[in-house]
Image (cartoon, rainbow, N blue to C red; front, side, top):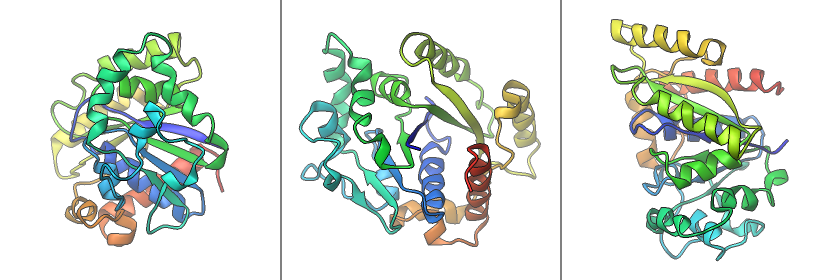
Length: 259
C-alpha cells in the first residue's frame, strides 16, 4: 500500500497535529503499519506520541541533510501502539528552510526522494506539516499522494484557504501531478454554536464530497492527551474527542477501501 498523506494548513491552532496523530493511532490500532513524520519544528506530533526529540536522537532533520538513512529502521521511534512509529523533529529543523533554500536543484524533491526508499515498509506515512507554506511544507506536499486539510469551526476558518489551495494546485502542476485532496476535516466544532454551523455550511459548499462527515468537537480530554505523550485512544477512549476520531478513522478506511 505505502500511501503518503500530508496534513497541512498554514493557519496554526486548527487541530492539524491532533488530527494527524489520532488518525494515525486509530489506524495502527486497526493493525496497519503507520509512520508519523513530524516536519513541524514545534515538535507537537513528536510530543503527542511520547517521542524523544533531543539533539542526541535522530530526526527528520538528519534524514533531510543526509546524516541519517531513511532505510535505518532504528531512527523510527516506537510508541505505545505496536504498529505505530514516529520520526521526530527537533529544534534544528527550524533552520532547515534556510538550508533548503540554498540548494540549487531538486530542493523541493528531497523528502520525496528520501521517502521513496521506505514507502513500501509502511501502510501509511503521515506527515505533519508546519503551519506555513514554506519549503518544508512544499517538500511534504511534493512527497505526498494526498493531503488532509483540517479546518477549525471559527470565524477566520476560510481565511487563507485559497492560498493553500493555490499552493496545492501549483505543486500538482509543476512538482507532483498525482497529488490529490483526500479530504477536509472540521475541528473544534460546537454543535450549540450558530457560528460552527455556518462555517460547516460554507466549507461544505466549497469542498462538497471532500468534506468528512465526522466533525471533531471541542473536548478537554482530547486537548489534555498530548501532554501525557498519548493519543486520545489510549488516554481516554470514552471521551467525545476519542469517539469522534474513531468515527473519522472508520470513514477514512471506507474512503480508502480498507477492511
